[in-house]
Image (cartoon, rainbow, N blue to C red; front, top):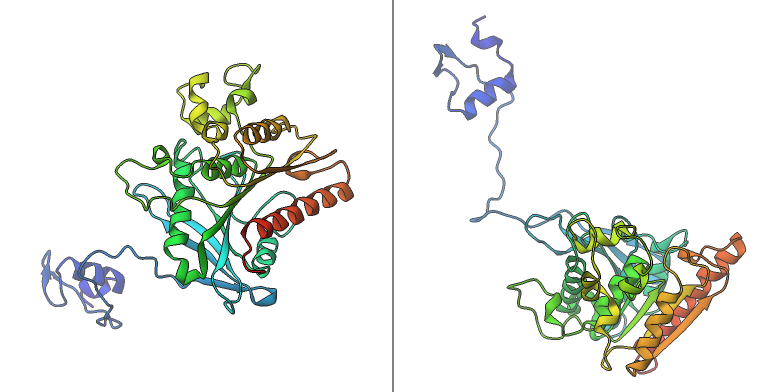
Length: 346
């Protein structure tokens, strides 16, 4: 056996890639042709392909609801693709209202499939879809990935994506609602209250006017005023906000208004429902009370529910209280979206 014949088939293939074909000299040696060698054919485009062609993951739920997992809504150079889960009701009737959910997680975690203390949040979203809504649960860039307003930009991009694809998903783009909890509540409030404010769009981006606007919003235990939230605390003691805002060291008071929902309130804002636990030790209930006060002063329709005994995520001192609080919040949220977004007796 020659020295060349002792090469492994894989090495022979590697040498062939370098231009050393069977029988041709390479350092005075001939490379044996591997027995499994064959020419494979694949489709090739004229330009580099960046499409995600992995089959969409579908799941079926009761009452004819179908969910699509990890749908890409935005691709930003240098970042991971931004994705969402979409829950679709049966398409037996016309276009349906859209509800977009924004997860919490202190701006550093969380995902599209958890909310409050609900044990199976995807099932809860599917049940909302079964009531006649198209429901999307979105990811966004976390504070460790990009500072604010990247998160608001992502939510606006998600709304625009869904409205641009309204026919495909069976959405009525003129009936849209936002819903979020905790960090997601803060971001949902910013998105709901900033309709038409181009300062929250990336530079050099052109988007359809008004496409990010919604007609209703539900905020669970959200932040409304960063200055009020940090008042009396030592500098740097709320490090997650410093990270979110991209401050060098810790943020000064001048950094807070551009990220605070109260800065965007005006008389044209959509109706809102605020729900908060009175014993919340993470985001004090005073934040929702302040938001409610400012919204009412501006003439915005606002409803509120303050639940006794429960902490953040509507967690109470007993499992029974936790269950009752979460069910109360979910039922009020769904009823509010029906009241604000249903049309023609739907």
